Image (cartoon, rainbow, N blue to C red; front, side):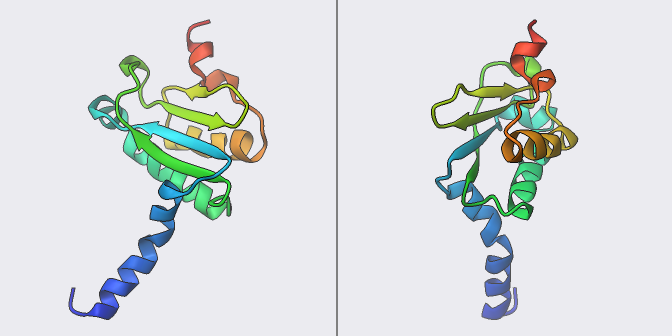
Length: 123
């Protein structure tokens, strides 16, 4: 960095991504980011959720955060979605493409994608 203006520009560029993770919305998206999750590809899944939520103007409604090991390493990357007064939904073996579909259909549309869930994996 060469100037305070450069630092300010970096801060402004990253502000939306940080705000998504710190907000208190009606819905929480939690991505398992322990070593097992990261090795299975959780980092691009987390980034996709952050970008898609931001691009959809859902930052006030949806909080995206990360957690450690969820305990189902063979199903990583794992994403849990929490909504008030509803059961937690656990999506498994996530990819950035699946994350985009979850944002579109579940978060925006209210429809759980059963084929991506832990319950479906164990049926």
